[in-house]
Length: 388
Image (cartoon, rainbow, N blue to C red; front, side, top):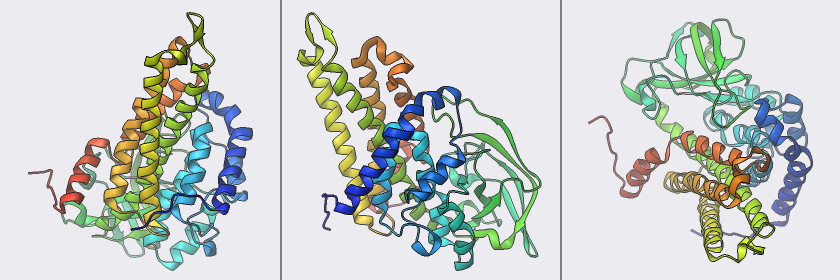
């Protein structure tokens, strides 16, 4: 396969626009939004939509940009370097549940559900994890029973990013008695549907403002037309998971790059023993390690995204990128804190916030431990049953 690593003129313009908006609009608000756990304002989501930055990979006929996946990752990185909360809406619209509707929904579903996402009026959040179904995603017990022209949902969900804030939810349910993924599917549920309620907002270490709360379904009835993935279609969703993993990887990349940028500036300004601390070899070595790890993550993501083109990335390439980028972000932001000394422990310099967020992205979307199992499976072309 051939991979081109030079940005086109159009991609450079896109990057510059995203960087300008990030620098002028969202960077000044990052500290405040993190401290106050402020949800991303709907007006800001619509601003991104009006600028054509929100839903780049969605087809033009549904209001999207009709652009390759990598173009969306360019925007995600630039926004997330300044303020990850601003990037999260792009992440959801371009690499999250909206892409499941795009890939697997009917024409009628695409026409109904995608334009509001592209306009910034709706965010679709994913609801898959449960108290007893996290990494073991196919253990979900929430049920969806088809009764005539309705689906009746009962059960609960946990660890849904955006829970309580998003307007719609792609809920993974058990539609039949078949075990594991064979009995599973996914249905769209609107916030405010009778019987659909939320617990208190979680106070998480990072990802502040994104929203996370337990979700409860008590005879929640939705039209059968909202069934996006029918029973037995769970395995197809690995395609969507691979797209989401590149979005996740890019959020981690942005944290690593932002921490590196701030550290590179700081070590050339901070003086100890009468000279810039960058003059000390241990500081040089640590900074060099940060550069190597950030660049390696960037190349893994770029390879997977370029090879995906307008479609979905190769699962092996996506899982490799996520595993490495997640762990890179934790290491690099930790080193940034150390090289900043006491200032790294202060929220004023924001590197501690980057470190908190880095741990969240490593948990979300399949942990590095689960990615390693996936990597071995894809590389060897073997399936490993974790239940044996």
